[in-house]
Image (cartoon, rainbow, N blue to C red; front, side, top):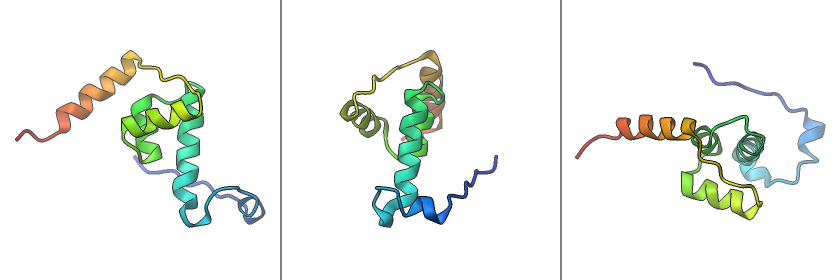
Amino acid sequence: MKGLSIEIPEDVIIHLRLPPRNLEQELKKELAVHLYAEGLLPQASACRLAGMNRLAFAQLLGERQIPVRYTSQDLDQDLISCSRVPKP
């Protein structure tokens, strides 16, 4: 599957209160948090979008007082991820 690109107008970008050096990564993190908080993205996918491991993402959610939900879909995603880890 291809990625998705979103064009953000320059006049919007200049008003963002995010570090310009890491703007793309910060926007991905903000999008991941919002989609997760709204129940639109499972935790594993939100972590991947944010570029964070599960522990760091859970900590970020806690800092923002967003409850961590662990659904059966999250479990399925974890099992898939575990099956992809090379065995020693």
